[in-house]
Length: 238
Image (tube, rainbow, N blue to C red; front, side, top):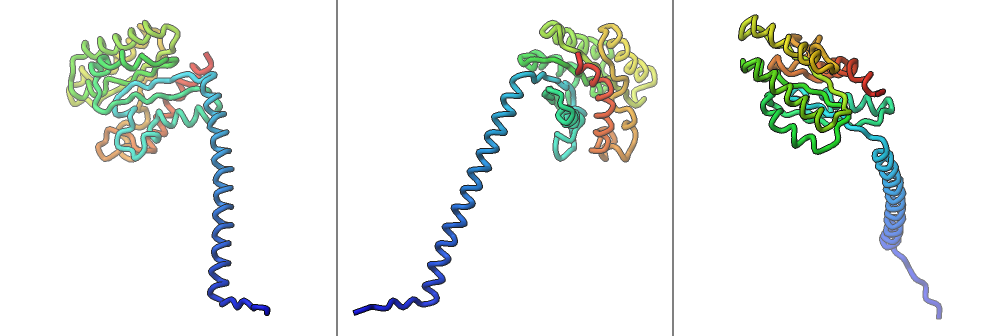
């Protein structure tokens, strides 16, 4: 006796849905595995490349280097320099060693720890907080020189760059003038690359700074990055 199996529409629909879900899940998993495999391969390739010729550029500074007030520190000039290096095929890794509120004395205290890692190009951006606080110019000069000396002693082949800074004449015209001059003299005495004024075209421009009038906004940092690049780029070929 033959038995005829009667399937209700709801039952058929549930069976169809089950197999459809299985197929979709299998397809997604397969796609994910293939994507993960490609990402792993790409990651492996990048890691191999990075261990061959990568050199370190250290930006050693205060809140200007750290990118104070920005949503993402990669939008600060140091991060923008990294993006430009990558886009142009330079095998350099940028190390953002900026600390908000840092003075030259603070930088001199922490430089030894930082020098535990290799340094190929060292960009020194400190002193702005000294100037705003009216710290002795002799102390500022001494601290900057000691930092440069420590880098040269540990990595004599490293290229050094000094970023000049200027301050408003709140503490007096004489102090302001001497503050600017000490950077010029230090760069000349140490025979190193020099950025006359890090905030050239940005300092004092409300549209390029945060509401505090001191720290660059995103557009301001793009201009700073161009200023730094003009001095940095020739050193990349050495």
